[in-house]
Length: 456
Picture (cartoon, rainbow, N blue to C red):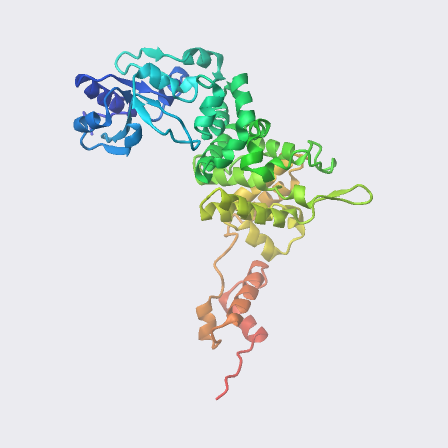
């Protein structure tokens, strides 16, 4: 509408919350990732506020706020278009479970900064002036593009074991190197990540793959974290392959290169779940090679059945990490089918069309192309698929079936397994081009499957 006021952005909403706290006599500052991202020239997402106000004082000012961590002094204040997290300055007591402090003491900004994970996340900003309050040398580390734990790195990681996975993820997300003492602490304490919940591991793993691809996987391996969270993938290191087909190196090297090469089909949303499923498919497509590897007497290396074994392993791994059922089924199918491509040119037309017409064929093709680019570089099978898809430009790859179950019932067939057998046979003949009309299909069924006589 002409002349209407645009809705406030997240920063405006957070500034209004901070201003109200200040007007009531409390200190209120922006804190964390948004401050870091603004200094990096990135578009921040959520703007969080740290304050001297206790949760009780915050609730009196914002009665509609939701308490999400009363023991940690955290409120969620709703806004017109954005909610704002408001946390009281605090010190944390001892951590005994690798995640939660045994007690929390309200404090001030300098001491609050000391309890945070990395220096680049420990910065405060005055909401009105933009002035940065830096008690941990975070600005210097941003300039040096360095990810450094606040204080003693080992202490920070023993407090919250997830911080080690976050170190790898932030290194990839920000493009920062991990400071040597911080990296050494991750390597020394990596086994503690075994205590982190599957859900929290899953989130950090996916972000690392999305932001870092092959680099992220290598860093997970070099820190020792991969052997803890995905030992099946870590086992791919050093597993040699036939040089003729894999001149790039072992299975782990191949997988890292594939992650770098993987590209979504043009019609897929890069922010959607398809990218997650493709990257997981790439990550796990050869996961069974370490356990299926054999060497013939003549020295030939084989991985017989690794796709079927890999599909079963993929199912177990993704269930262990609490992935949604849809993701598990989709990725399992990608792994199970990745060796079908060499057989496509010789495949029966009906079977080929079923594969080309699969709703996820674009992901299968993307995985295959990445597989080729990360090894021998031969994309002829991908070109074959694209040519065959183009040949169906004037018709669906999978047209509507000529017959349905109701048609067979109308012809006098009784309900039962025979109906499925007939429908599959007719469908194959249709996709092979043998049957093209409903009438032809009916005649073929009557010829090949006479209606059984019924006893009177």
